[in-house]
Length: 211
Image (cartoon, rainbow, N blue to C red):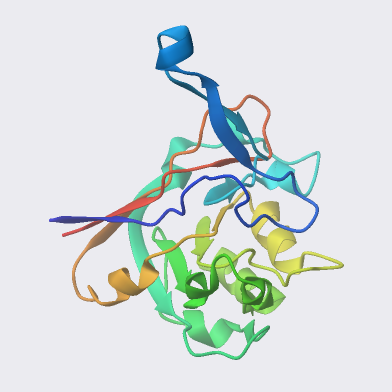
């Protein structure tokens, strides 16, 4: 059994979605001065590796704490979407073999661009691909990119389809290439969010367990 960390580190100045709060992390208390170390954090609910609740795009949809915990862990299928050009759409043809109750992780390889300007030029799910996943009963979708929709975006069609079905979206994953290399072995994923009341999303420590 092997554990694979699928999370990016939370640190000052890390990449964020355009317009989101900038991240800062630094000592609030120190052993030398206060007798203990305590880190002060400023970040948005979608900083780093995180999950989106349906409430993220519609006030009438469930908040993070209204979703069942089963949305955040379970057996996973990793879809290989590597090698695409910048800003390429990922259509439904990539998802013909997936079925519920799996968590679907989309490996674009774009996590290699984390911390660079190229990170915003990631591939993205089409509305049709999102609709197929919902039709197949998938209720958790993750991607190793800044968003399941283009960045920046005038609208969020993949978000709207997935969130409209009360699905969870995980973004800014990393390390999915290691899961692709483990193809044929059972994979479980755990993406439990901070318990924020009434939230639209939250950072997670995403981890895979490879059997």
